Image (cartoon, chains in turn green, brown):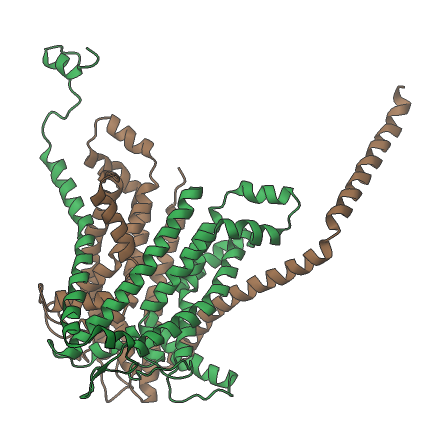
Length: 318
Length: 314
């Protein structure tokens, strides 16, 4: 009888009734379907992004050879004598990523070690929201700050460099670095705080100093989260548009490694092109999508790496 | 062996303890000189790093305040955009445009974001491949650059399947899709923080799944969900890049409508003013930045306050 309570109730034993709902409850089912639809919309969005990027990209590559696209060193899609070598704007993006990470990694990691290991609770309560405020500043504001304030500052601090024109990708990249500091700080702070107290106490008991505990125990233990933070910040730098558009200019696609020059990036090409007049169905219109697809794939790869690393530190300590 | 001998004994103990302490201290402090230097250097490096980040934040705000200060009058908010008279031009139509666009964003992200968060936390069986796909997909969407959402908006919303043209509604939809992952991720965190004992108790008393969610889970998770929504809206207010592609770069001198051509938003208008060569437009743009910063920072502070005020440890 214990094995078949349903049979017992249907046999007429009043005491044992089925735990199933008395009515089918269609309302509950409808709600579940609606909520599932809400969640599934995100998948539809991804599918829509992929379709809207890759269909025009496909027609783009029917006119331009893939080899020319990836190896060409001249980017002039709008000229009458058009050239579609994407390298100059990829190099522009790479300069932004390298310089901004060069600024943000030391600042972000040192800040997060301070916040998680050294800062008194009171200081932490003030600094953490301040960094969140920095993360919330609109990128247009940061771009204009770079263009109007940081560029003249850079010229007076480094007068021996040859500054030409109002734009420079190096200044834009430093501003992007400021923008991604909070990304590094908040993710790696989370990772370091997830390191169990017992590891620190064990090290202290063996006579380690605070510095040794922070750098030789906590930092290595949180390394996967820290890597994730840096990769995420890099992905933000790849996709950052307004700062680069304002401070590095959109009209100068040239292959150069000189950070004082105005250089176009993948994002500023898309934004700059789209603000002008664009006719649908032309090859110039399709370049927006081809570059967008390249941008999407590169950030997707970075995000997947970051998600994998975050998952690893979650698995170990949580 | 009575009262007389206790005193020297305590003295002996005291002597031994202090001797032991001195020995320990000596052993521990043997490397202390170097340690102290390292400690000081490291602390100052960390403080310099933190100081640089905060200095950037503060100098941005101060710079914009000095630069745009002269134009901080009511006309800034009520003046109609103009390309010829920067002294009286303002952000009226752009502010209205932002209100329309953000209104649409809120209407879209509240049901969709909270609904998705509830589904993933309360209904989804995470062993099923499609639920895992949704989860991974949302994490990835959160990292897609905003300009890519602009391309999506251009190809799918302005033109293509939806084809509503370069209107404020297109801006709303594009920004809503952009910030949706933020709302979902924050909502999930908030719902997950409600202890299972409360859900189980409600279910045990005979409430249905939805009654439990409506009566117990959502009220308890509300502050966290609200925080996520406010942060998402603050981000949408300041976002300019995707709007460049869906039609916000028009110099509108009339009040915009939700479904009619021609709208702009505050950050896009700032960008347009800043692009003009005259000094007056630069001041105007800087004043606009101040308005935008005040708006965004107020919302961020509200979110932080909400989280700290209502955060409950179960």
